[in-house]
Length: 295
Image (cartoon, rainbow, N blue to C red; front, side):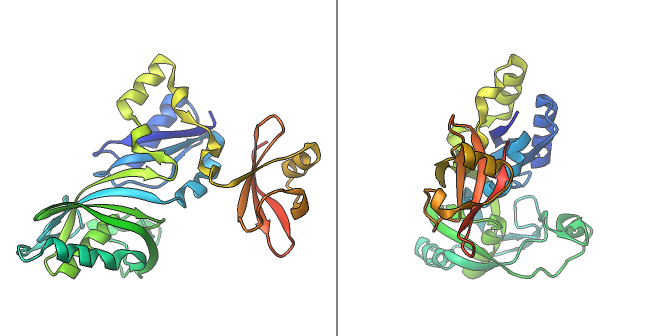
């Protein structure tokens, strides 16, 4: 039961409901997802089962790719198509070249204010609950990273962009900020997450297919190994002595680990290829400290 399902979440359901479905179908109590998708959004939702829930944090730190359709000239209170229209403007003066120029401002590290309609919490309550009650909370801007942003299609007043970004980036806020910079307002018309780290939408499984695979008894073919999220890290093979050190959480000297010390983490395996865990390099002691151990 230890592994990760690359689920293609359909629009209209919550990420939590997908987790609940997998928990019910699998009978596994420990189930969680790696990064919430809004109910209206679709696409890649990695669902971790069993001990794989312990590597969720590494998966959430991976770059994510989104394909977003944005409508210019209409600003809504939620920043997406489900919200109430706040204002309408004529976007006919906006050109493709103008959009390309403005998109450049969103590349790299940028300051972004999270939307009120989000799962962030204030006083223990999600912001979207407060927003629905008519309460607006001051949200400090946060530093997020956009690795790449490309204009895929230009059919005014609609445009489609592809965004590769880091953790904590809100595409809805990006759509609203784009509309403000263009002077006409905008909202997110639709959103598809096409990639989360090593998990691509082309390899994902739909909910109907996943449910059928459980009934037919072959769902394990969709279960990826929990170390899949760490395949970009250096791998070491621990000998018998080092294996015992790792299992008991004892650090290894840098000399005994043939991995580049410039890498913050590495993954460790037994001599017969079983995944042992994640080691983190401590520059002060020049030792590799077991961070996550999977006995």
